[in-house]
Image 1: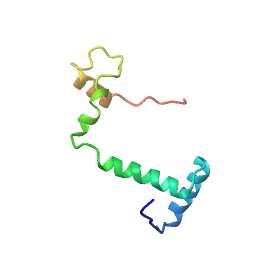
Image 2: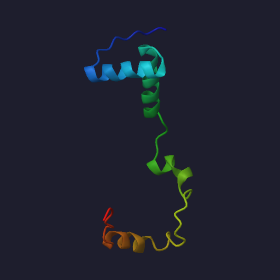
Image 3: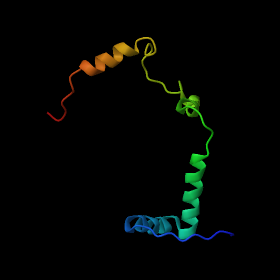
Length: 89
């Protein structure tokens, strides 16, 4: 390792780190390195629109409504005007 860093943590973050060390059975430094890799990797992702990141998911769910794509406005308005169902009575 070439770079060493000392960090002061607020109490709540210190407790969360301590809990993570017990849960993952790792050292503080291992968890901090993992967190930094995740955080810095998230900021270096390819730029683009949010839809580009989920493009593979679009159309992959089954709603059970055969004409949802053509009558989506109807279903939205219907759900907004429908009275809530009372439960437990």
